Amino acid sequence: AQSVTQPDIHITVSEGASLELRCNYSYGATPYLFWYVQSPGQGLQLLLKYFSGDTLVQGIKGFEAEFKRSQSSFNLRKPSVHWSDAAEYFCAVAAANQAGTALIFGKGTTLSVSS
Amino acid sequence: KAGVTQTPRYLIKTRGQQVTLSCSPISGHRSVSWYQQTPGQGLQFLFEYFSETQRNKGNFPGRFSGRQFSNSRSEMNVSTLELGDSALYLCASSPPPGQGSYEQYFGPGTRLTVT
Image (cartoon, rainbow over all chains, first blue to last red; front, side, top):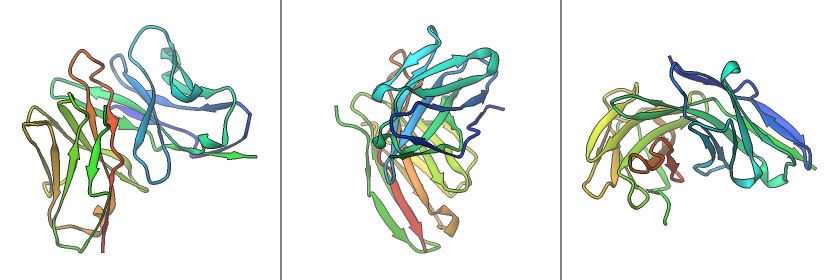
């Protein structure tokens, strides 16, 4: 069965420091992978996506992610974190079949930014 | 383009009642998906509609139902509400096939509280 694991429930990073959020997936075919961000009381905003091709993908707000098939990972990175990046981050895989598409999400990682 | 809109944003209902939530997708998007988000279970897929037909369904009881109209707007209904139905209900729309159709764009959600 498809699944997504985000091993870190909560991470605290100093403002200006680098960030890496981990994501591991389990999916039989070529995965379509996403990172979303959710601020308190808000919906999910798409940060970036991987469908195929270059394994390093760039997203909005200065985020990037690297797809590593051998490690079944799709980790999110940012070189310098800003206080406004504090939010909850979700990794997801698109489980697509003839019937349609559903996103399977990890449990999320809450990012706190300290000054 | 306007984003996905959901109404109402907040709702308080009593056990045993029923509720209807509404979602308007991004213009041109014909696929609408619904998700339930709770602290315990995280984000879970409810169902997906495309061209007024349900084409994918998650593992939820029959009390949860939905429909889609010819203008792609969608509603979901929960009958005989239980305390455990308290959650943030998120709607997402997807671009047409061939235009990044695996990615989903989320609305702000409807916060349902069942007392």
